[in-house]
Amino acid sequence: MRKIFLYALAFMALVTTGCWSESSTTNEDNGSTTTTPEPTLVYNIVADDYELITDTVRSGESMGKILNRFGVSALTIDKLDKASKDIFPLRDLRPDRPYTAFVATDSVVDEKKYTHLDYLVYEKSRTDYVTFGFVGDSISITLGQKPVTLNRQRKSATIESSLWGAIMDEGLPYELAANMEDIYQWTIDFFGIQKGDAFTVIYDEELVDGELVGVGRVWGMKFTHAGKDIYAIPFIQGDKLQYWEYDGGSLRKMMLKAPLKFTRISSKFTYRRLHPIHRVYKPHTGVDYAAPMGTHVHAVADGVVTFKGWGGGGGNTLKIKHAGGYMTGYLHLKGYAKGIQQGTRVKQGQLIGYVGSTGTSTGPHLDYRVWKNGTPIDPLKIPQEPSEPISEANKAKFEYVRDCIVAELNGETPKEVITQVDSIVIK
Image 1 (tube, rainbow, N blue to C red):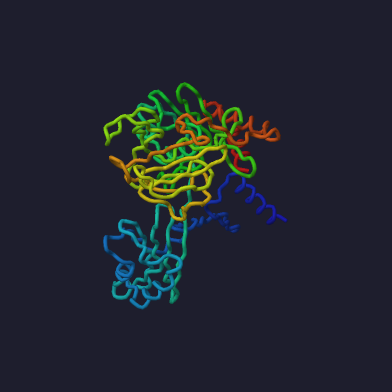
Image 2 (image 1 turned 90 degrees about the vertical axis):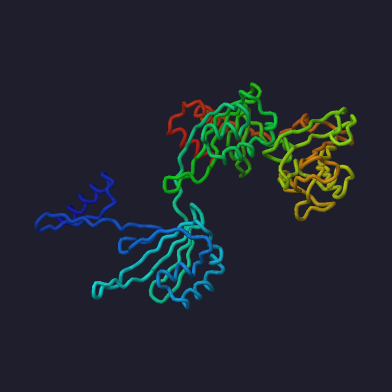
């Protein structure tokens, strides 16, 4: 009984102190304690018995050449090449990517070390790696991923020229700008951003080995545009995470604000524009987006392709029919996305073509047009009909989440409340 009691006391001490990083044993004869350190794991390999050699792939260097330097035979390399084809083809090795060799010392004879390469780990990216094993006579190829740490951030910025400029000025991840445009693409005209517009955003930084590798979930945002605060509150309805306005209206609308990203408007809708080539005043019932050749063009709404072909001065042209009597046109395309034909059904946001300069054009751009019941309308002034709002059944829970996130955007929400809200959002 005394021995059981002593073990119980030791167990309780471990639980209350949280000391699980080392294992301890007690010698009952003299009361001494010996501590055994936990093994060191590198790429999930116990590294204590190895010499670790790190390097980077040089230009023109093959896996065979690297392995040969560590004494791996040509026969083994050939076996590895065949075994890895469906997991990670050796030809996919890229210059300047790091690798780590785990070298074991087998014996020492006449002061000379006899070593053996047991593992070589190649980093495909900052998060993903491949482990090539040569233990004994076997060969193994396994894929792994470094643990990603999430670090919640709350950042604010005021726009002086553009969203991307503000992101760069504040030293924020570039990926954050793309995420913002994805969330607000139905609601905010990013070609109409004004000096003095501002945003506050809550998001997860993704860190690997203490270094930023990406942006995770956006937990909430407030974008002040033309003096109006537009919120983006994450909430699941219908088993799908979406972003919602403050009043529970969906940020998703019938049409995207624009069919492409990261460009500028070079010409607006007008019935009297001096044509840049013909030098006469003519109607221009569309919006020109200046963009680099090959920029992706997306369908602004669900619909059916009714025309694909040469449109005279419009060059390569697509026309898509949508619900509600709307039709959109995409002119001067360099080419069309794979699978796009007359009669093809397309989804909102689907890639349909690429910016070009075909037809009567002075440079690469997209001439984007909209018709309502056959009459041209200004694409920048389309009435936006929202998708289904938050349901009555979800209203109370949404309002709780919204109020907590808005408070966090203002720097007021306690951490325990944030955790509770997160569990609701990601349920």
